[in-house]
Each structure stands twice: as C-alpha cells, then as structure tokens.
Length: 589
Image 1 (cartoon, rainbow, N blue to C red):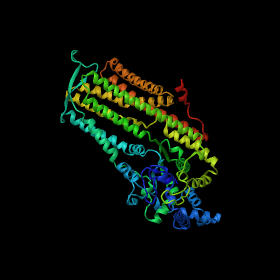
Image 2: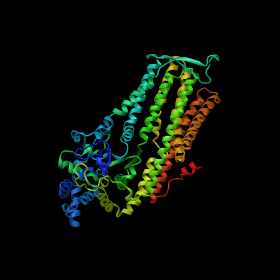
Image 3: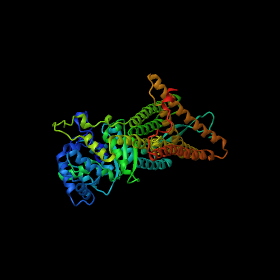
Image 4: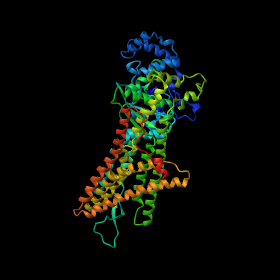
C-alpha cells in the first residue's frame, strides 16, 4: 500500500513494466494506488498463501500461521482484496531479502529518467538488500513531475551544490585577487567614508565575474549530476519486474516497506490530500511512529522547487547583469532596480497563491470525509483501459485496512482531521522553507560580492574590501533571514484573492513595498551604525554579527513556536485550530 505510493513517481505504470510517464488522461494510465496489484491479482493470492504457509520467514510466517490457527482462516479461500489488506495491516515482509533500496542519486539521474520513461530492461540490479530504508517518498502522481523533481534535487543535491559552488567561487576569488585572471575596467560606486575627489564620483577598477561564474556553473552541475548517497524505496527499481516469485513477494510486502522506513518525505501539492492513498499512507506512517518515535516526517511543498530555483536564477542573472551593464549611467541603474522590484513582486504574488493552497489543504483536512477522496481505479470503472479486464479495487483494499487499524471509517476520519492535519501543518511550519534553503537561494549575491572584493584587493584598497565583506555578511546572513519570514508572514496574512484583478495586484504591490521598505530600513541602520561608531569597522562588524544572529533566531523561533503548538495538539489528542490566523480578516480590512 504505502510502499508503492512512497515513491509515487512509480505511478502511471504497472509492475509489469508499463509506462512510467505522466498520464495524459485518467483513462490512459494506472496513475493511482497499487497498480501492481491490479495486474497480478491471482498471482498475489498465490504468493499470500505461500507466504503465510512458509516456515522459513522468522517474522512473517510464524505470525501468519498463528493467526490462521486461532481464527481458522484459509488464506487461499479469501477474496484477493481481503488477503492484500490483511497482509498490509500486519506490515510484514514475505521474506527478509525483499527489503531492498536504491540510492537517490540513481533515482534522480537524468532528472528522474528511470521514473519518467518506459523501461526496456529491469532495473532490479540497481537496488540492494538493506536492514532499513532511510527515506520513504510520498506524493501524488497527479501533481506536476517537474516540480517534484526540483524539490527532490534541492533536498538531496542542494547542500553539495552550495558547498562545492562556494569552494569553486573561493578558488577563483583567490586567483582573481592576485591578478592571475584577466579583468576589465569597470566603474564602481565608492562607499561613504572613503576619501575621494569630489569631482570624481566614480572610480574604475579591474574586475570580472570569475567567482560568480564558477560558483553558478559548478553548483548547477552538482545539483543535477551529483550522485546523492542514502537509501530510498522505488518500486520500479526495488521490486523485481520479471521474476514472478520475487515480484509477488515484493508486492505483498508493500506494507512492510513503510514499517522499515526511518523517515518519510511528503511532497505536498494541491492534489495530495484529494487522493485516498496519500492520506492513508501518511496516517499509516504516523501510526508506525507510535512504535518508533525516532521516525521523522519531512514535508516539502512542491512549490518550493521552482520557487527556490527561480530565486537562485534571478539572483544569478541580476548579479551578472550588474557586472556587464551597470556603469555610470543612471538610466541603467534605474532599469536594474525596476527589474529587481518586478521579480520581487512576481515572487510575492506566487507566494500568496501558495499560501491560499495551504489554507485550502488544511480546510479540506479539517472537513475530511472519505467519500470525498479519489481513487483512480474507481475513476476507470475498475477496468484495465488496455484490455478491459477487471481490476482489484484500491478503495476496497483500503476499507479493509481501515477496519483492521482504526475499527471503522469514522475513527479514521477523525484521525485525519486531527493527527494527520496537525502533522502536515507542523511539517510546513510558519517559515515556509528551511533556513538553509533561503540562504542558498541568494548564494549568487555572495559570490558576486567576492568578485567585488577581489577588484578592491587588486587595486590595493584593502580597507574598501573589508567594508564590502562586512556588508556581504550583513546582507546574506542578516537581511535575507529576516526578509524571507516577513514575506511569508505578509503573504499568508493577505493571501485572499480579490474579486478585481487590479485590486489583487494592488495587494501584491503593497506586500512588495513593505518588504522593500524593510530592506531599506535595515540598510539605513547599517549605514548609521558605521557613521556613529568612531572605531573603524567596529560598528559594521558588530551590526553584522548581531543581525545574523537575530535573523537565524527569528527564523528558528517561528518553526519552534509552531512545532511546540503542534506537539501540544498531538499530545492532547484533539484538532484544535492553529495559532490565531486572521489572514482573511486582515485581507478584508
């Protein structure tokens, strides 16, 4: 059940090696649920019977024999759906060797080519036996594949991309500082306090974007090509697609895969809570946390993938443009600032839409009814679209599992309204994205500042270079961690869509203006501290350290506060509402 959907990139095909690409319509693909069950109903019944009767499995077979002896149940005579549900709810493995995993690096190679394209050969050899699965992917196949891939690439390859990109930028910075690399004469603005002839407002230095170019090229290559370590379960790779015996054992062990998974990564999109399989697998994982509290749930909105990547590209293009175009012309400077504001406004408008999507998701979970969820098998009329053969009903399997685990549908619905909803809300948090993701998104700014420092060092202006370095720390580690939470807070408060387009755009402009004014205020404080403190570099240095610490603590405080509230709600066992959220009321005001 949950093992297959943990890597729902495997949806849209069957275990027989059918198509893996995203379905064009509901009728052209087995895009939801345990597609492998539908193609192998008879085979599964045989494997279930064999697994129940096998005496070699130390964990699974003994429990199955004892249950059958106590209840007098003959597995071979039960309907396939009941057999599958019974085995899933026990969360057993047909045999220890079926627990296999593959690496995220292989699964994401070629932007997930192994999961997006039809395969002509079995990839089972690219998996290996494990004692546990590190991470369990959970997502809806009906979401956009590219967005999910970007989130996964950022999650697994992002840290390596930032580190190696920064190292490359540092190497180029060192060579550039000593004049080993070619440069061109560029007009730069002197900082206030530098000695400069009043008739010469600009100074020309030898500069070139070596650090920026090296950092961007290396980071992009690492992001898409880095062989990320770890272990994940992907049914297309970890379940044998050609050997009937191994395939059958893997299929009936789906429930055991989630039991032996340490973490779950939920790739949340607008379709996630609409799919019955997604909700059930998340509830099952939370249920397994009762036996192993060390299991960790990680929620990543798929919106973060294009959002962070677009921020990164915008900064890279903007910084490169500042090197190539920015000169003594005031017109070019104004055009550059206008483009920056436009990008910021587009980002704010997208954030408002994202906040509305989250609000709608939480409302759906708060009013959760199982009859409102969707299952692809029911949409297709329980018929294989290729040969019109009958298919095993996913919903029937789920109802059997719900009866085993929760007693009845009402208790399961209450579990979703309370524990599942709170877990998703806790995973999303108030900050919207991880702290390190926000810092990494503006790395091109830090790299271009290294080029600016190198230009000052080549000219023998060490004092000027020190000022740029302090300003870089203030902007990168101080202003950014304060501005992004402010942007998420304002877009959440004013998320409601207005009836008139002009009014809706006006709200976005208002939010953007507030963020820009906050940035200007922080910079004015920095300039004021630099002027008031008589000791050179002391004031800006103290401000840089203090603002960096405040930025980090502000970001973390939002996550800690929300996590503490969520834990209290879980321990109390009720579905109280989140901390006061008057976003819609504020929007109306």
